[in-house]
Length: 108
Image 1 (cartoon, rainbow, N blue to C red):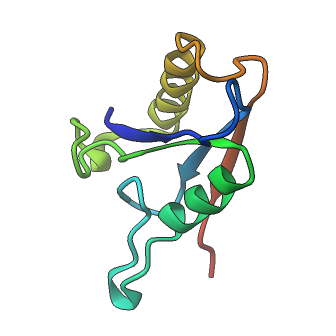
Image 2: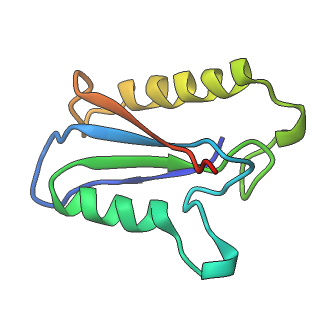
């Protein structure tokens, strides 16, 4: 799984939010081609400026992540979130007791 961890500059051990996509295969920026918009990049920038570190990652088979999105189950996606949490808990530059999940799903 490949992703980007954005850290605030002024805080030594910030809390961290993991951004989780939920509507089809998406890269770490949740790029919306028809609108040329990257909502996860914008959200990560905002949260980081508010003192919250942000981890966002490419879904399976998207961007730099390996695997096949179409073959993945809900359980596999839960394992991806668990792997992201495990990765963050190995770091000493964030507050590992303050890891939050932020899932955004498009519905319609």
